[in-house]
Length: 89
Image (cartoon, rainbow, N blue to C red; front, side):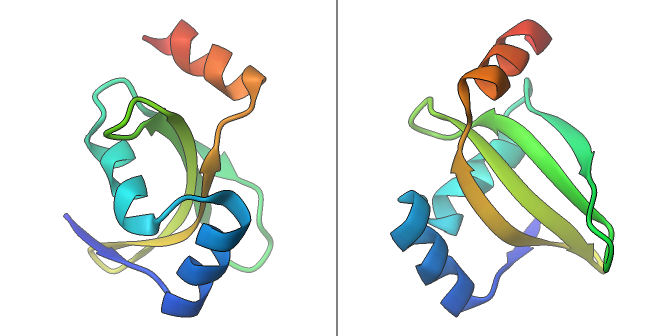
């Protein structure tokens, strides 16, 4: 799978949330991850909730650009999102 992101947005995200987009791509390899539609008016966006390579539950907001996943943001999941993930397993 091919991943894209804006370098400035990735730096901002890393500063704000402590998550590098390269690390966040692991969520898409998590067999227990699930995706919900993200309500955004200007484009179709999704939020994937899954574990990264370190076992942290992340929420990765993304959109499709052709055949590529374009990551918009990544952050650690809230307690509620972690619970949802555990219930999905």
